Image (cartoon, rainbow, N blue to C red; front, side, top):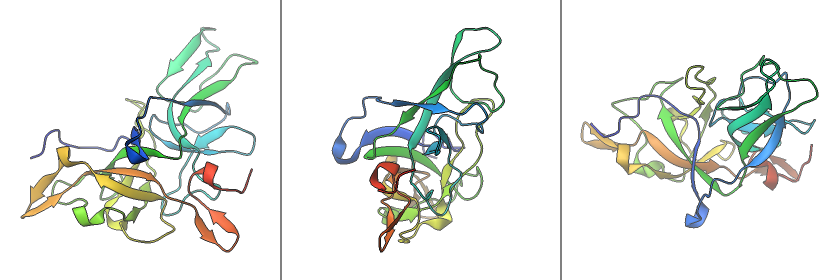
Length: 219
């Protein structure tokens, strides 16, 4: 059995960038609407037309205007303590102080690469199958699980059975993670992959999906 064992999804974890560029932890602050749905650490997010971000629930296709990046925590002023609060997640229904805002930290670079778990469905990471080396450069669907309310981490992952050359799929497999690979019935499988947001799917003059910064259609 490989070490460490991958037993559950954890969202999209930023690593380096395309071309071996270093990820220095840079983020951009974006507001979250006070009534927004919960967002876990590592959840992909989208822009909303009021200037805020929200969790993406896209699976087999990307959101029409593209991904805004990945959520890496937030800060707000609690209405209970009156103090600045830093959180791994935004939890829907959290009360904030009047005349204040919720600020998310978003990993927004369009060249960003992410490490992500491979599931066979919902949050199941198989111990007898996974991606194979031939799946590099395939596209895959996301599984938009809601966050883990205990750890406050995302539980989104990529779906093993969806790996294909289909242009509309929202995620591109760039590489696989050898550290957690394992052999089953003589075949080497990979339960984790290195991925990026796929480029926009272009039909005529219509751009769908990809990263929002590569999509010329504004909000």
